[in-house]
Image (cartoon, rainbow, N blue to C red):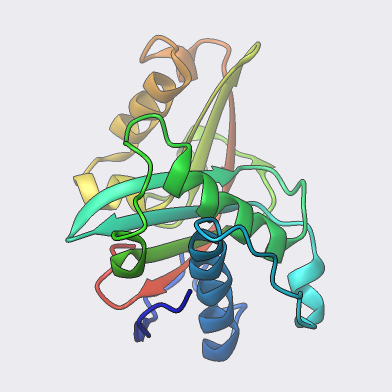
Length: 199
């Protein structure tokens, strides 16, 4: 199944530097689109030779948009699988397994716009070290864990304390758990996507 070619938009990454070239970003987006498209025809395409760092284990989130609206977002917070596989799996899961939405239909798939967030490794952080717009955040307490990407507080115009509170909410914790025993970890993300995709 073919899909329309979507021009690439390259926003500033949250780390301030670009790890991936424009061609590599385009290739990662093509992997995401192809993973969704082939789900409808049950075909397995041969895997090409990717750049070496596509085989490094990385966390990644795939965010889908349809007609300007969020259509799904799923990802890996931890580097548990090679980047090319994480992109393919998270895009497919965002299309078909995000419980907030009905599965993407075959008619919708060619119109999807995709934004990818490739994550750095998590690192411990103190509250006053978190920079809104630069850092993503993970709040953990026992088995409960919440994650928000760096672009989320910017999109909602949150200050740092609200960012902490909303990450606690995502974890199912009290809003002030970040002050009382929850652990804080941060990460940066290189965010890029099809032209017209948020991110």
